[in-house]
Image (cartoon, rainbow, N blue to C red; front, side, top):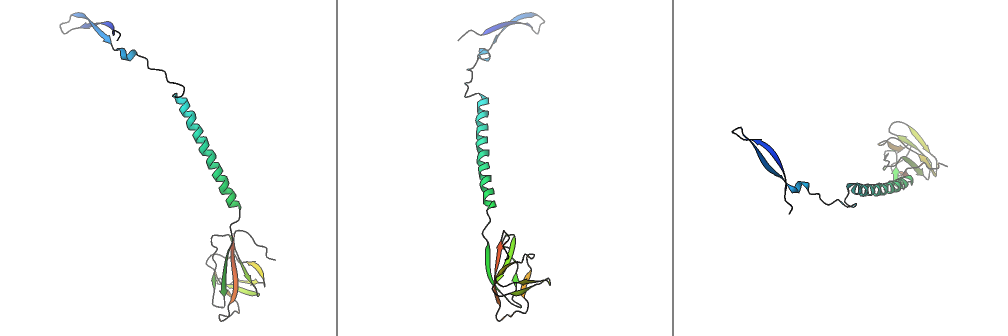
Length: 161
């Protein structure tokens, strides 16, 4: 082990006399550690982290694209066969869809609990997009032989011809 470096320092003792004091400098403080390799340099850790972030962002972008494609496709409609009479009503329920249509083999006139009426022509789909909770009944209908209809909830407008 190399001899420690030293330097002289003037020191005044408690009696007021000046004397030279030898002090050694620790050699460990002067030792140079190995230089870091390129792989250990912090900039390369940063580059690796950025590459991982970019891969993660690309993965998320692919997932978002798949979700958008799924949402662009129309969801399946929900058909609800039901009987409607003079006092046997149907409560409007959209089943998380945007539009509501009714189909009836014979023609009939619907009456909503808010007082409005809607004529349903025979064998056609008619838009009945009333507010949720509206109760529909058949005008001049019978509870003994109620009208059998199909209610369709869907995300797209149907052709009403």
